[in-house]
Length: 167
Image (cartoon, rainbow, N blue to C red):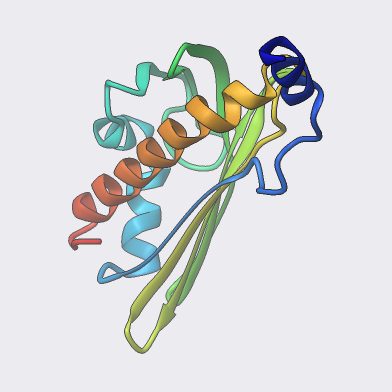
């Protein structure tokens, strides 16, 4: 009976929750200040927790649109080494959008969206993810995604702190 339940669970439809990693905060620093930290990969590297970003090597160029880096994500038992490019850097005084494009067949995009509001800057970071295929889907949702959520939240808090504020 236990074997039947295990097999049924393994073949079940993916969870109804999104695979994406989303972190949202209202913070004190301006969109420009946050984008400045993100646009300089040597500076951004200081915001990355070593527990989940095992390696981060800025490339050439290391700042501005087109900046590149090589990094390794370590989430649960998943390790993913990817090339990353700062592919979008749109900065205005009250709004900014920064995209980090992670190349390859296991790549993804992390978008930092910032907009000034009365209470501060609305900051939303979305990492668009496709969950791995069976038999790893359940492991992604149970182990990898929670660690990735925590890591991304820590990165956001660190970047905000470096930009001159607290999350």
